[in-house]
Length: 331
Image (cartoon, rainbow, N blue to C red; front, side, top):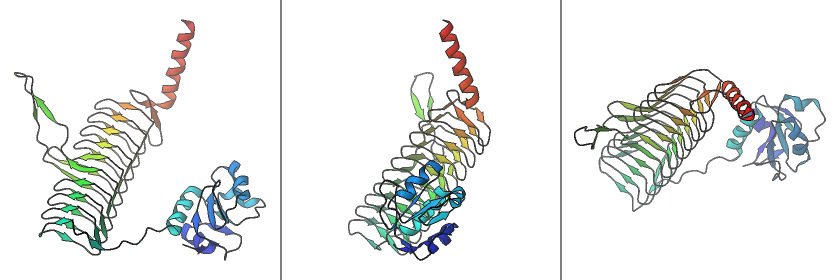
């Protein structure tokens, strides 16, 4: 979709240096750019390659405005963010063709807003309430009594168990499972056998959440599991029962959160992090890849990076590694 640079600059709150009437129609990497493309740079070292590329224009930081560019510049305080917004403008989602596939099974008591697209072999159970402009991919299963807000999109083979409540503009990728039973058992000391602890709580998902492919989010045992507005879960993330995830939390792939863990707003959790039960991750804390957080531990420190197992501030972790290295050399 073509837009003038003036239109793009207005949409992303950037200052345009150059010809406002020039048009761009795509975003691209510097290496693959063609005429009509828009690229971005965050690192000053990449400005020269961007200017030498075939791209029509470059989104860059304030430092780029002082030199001779030879190419139109969109000057932004946060070039990557401006580029993401430009991409949304230049590459809008294709319009949804409304309709219900003939193989879909829709219960008579289900209420579905309009327009909606329901794909082949999708299933919508009794008492479901679905908002407007919702997309249900092929093979998706919506359990009894589920509520779904407006403008949600579920890819193929998503499974949503009974009673789950989902907000507006939620995106769920293929194979994700929402509202399954948590992993809770009680051992009988007389027999050594395990008996299931009740898993009869609920699951609520706030507005603007995105959940990756093959992620799993368990319902609460007796209370709620909740995911706050704007949280982003990567592929293969597992969220256990009674977990509470705050607003704008980001969790990368293969992370597991055990029962009753709490992640406060704005925290960042990298890949393959293991979080034990009843842990609290404070607002804005950052857990590096493969951290381990033991039961009932509290992690505090907005903007502080934690690393290792057990997780501790990265400066402490690196000092400990250095001390171990010195000991090893002495040995």
